Image (cartoon, rainbow, N blue to C red; front, side):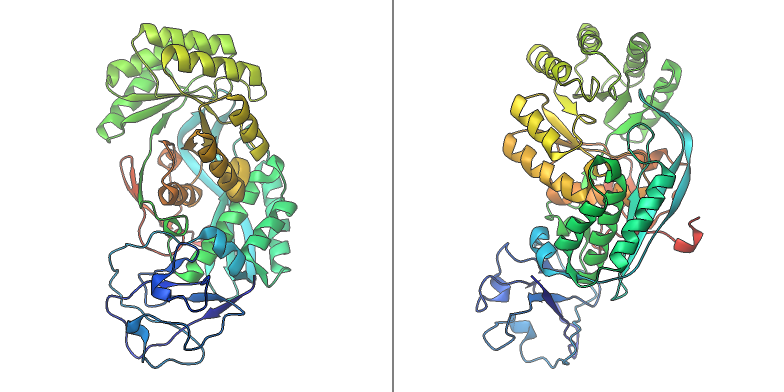
Amino acid sequence: MAALHISLSLSKPIQNPLPLVSTPTNQNQSLKEMDSTGFSLYTPSHSFVLCFPVDTKLSSDLKFPRKLRGRSCSTVITACMAAAAPAATVTSFGFKNLMETYTVNVHRAEGRPLNVPLVSPFTIASSRLDKVENVAIRIELINGCVGWGEAPILPFVTAEDQPSALSKAAQACEFLRQSPGRTLGLILREIGGVLPGHAFASVRAGIEMALIDAVANSIGIPLWRLFGGASNTITTDITIPIVSPAEASELASKYRKQGFKTLKLKVGKNLNQDIEVLQAIRRAYPDCLFILDANEGYTSQEAIQVLEKLNEMDVTPALFEQPVHRDDWEGLGQVTAIARDKYGVSVAADESCRSLADAKKIAREKLADVINIKLAKVGVLGALEIIDLARTSGLDLMIGGMVETRLAMGFAGHLAAGLGCFKFIDLDTPILLAEDPVFGGYEVSGPNYRFSNARGNGGFLHWNDIA
């Protein structure tokens, strides 16, 4: 459905403004009393936008909130609100509805290398990363609003490397520049055709992030509200990569002092050394919660052996993530059943869940208890589909990332906070970077992230400083 964007100019700002809602299901329905089929527009700035279907008649039948009645307004509409941010009481903005009503016109779109050093090499069972070589996406709409995205690159995990990601990003950006006047939903689906499947999922995620961020900036709301407004805070775990027992002990002590309650330990390269590292961490931080992440590194028998060893140590992990190779469905199901029934441990599918079809198989055959959502694996729209499936299937949800800056991590955090449905949150990798190229964005206090009422993602790059 096409949309008409209306702006109102008021003679003075409204004190204690009422929420305004778009896309009425009934033309005579009071805007003040709109239900969740619409979405409320809130911004801490002086402006907001009303978005109606083009066939809506702007007549006296539309009952505007009393505080708007009788005010003078111009024909070209632009609206003013009080600068002071009111108490946030409205939490639903109907992202799915917005996709079918907001018309996107892209003025500029570009991808550039986003290279950031790490504090130290990041080693997991399947790969080692010495520096971040991601791709930043900038999309500017014809109204001047800008959105930001990031395509993370992790060797042997994402299908893309940086050169191929830059090439596909350039192709997608050219497509956007040549595709005016499409609804957000249609343009996102078309991007799915330009960048299909797992092969281009990371770039697709970056493009989707930037488009959604630009639209959220246009309508003046933060992403966490756009995705449902359940909360504006999240608490993350912190990852200890594959290191020596002494290094792991030092990191555990450091993270304990910083307030982290849950440590995610990378395992899967050497079973005996993994046990030694667990013992060292246990001595340094006896009351921490554990998540084990094997990144496909174990056989099913090795994974079960780890659980046996931990049981002897009187340690029960909060979660055992991707214990076996992503294509070892039988082994995954076997480990899940034993972990759950014998040791009371949940198993998460990460690399094994790279599509909606994978998620359906996991749910149908009870191959895991938890699905780990990563935008770089399935894109934003793909993630929302899998989230819906998991929730209706009784599976728990985890949200994680690759090695990303606060651009991509911030988007995922907004999603997690807004939806409020994730049992496990693993959005820590910006803490592992030696530099932070992102300006603005969420506030960090140890494991706690807080998202403000700044419109969109809230974070941005100085584009001229990007290579």
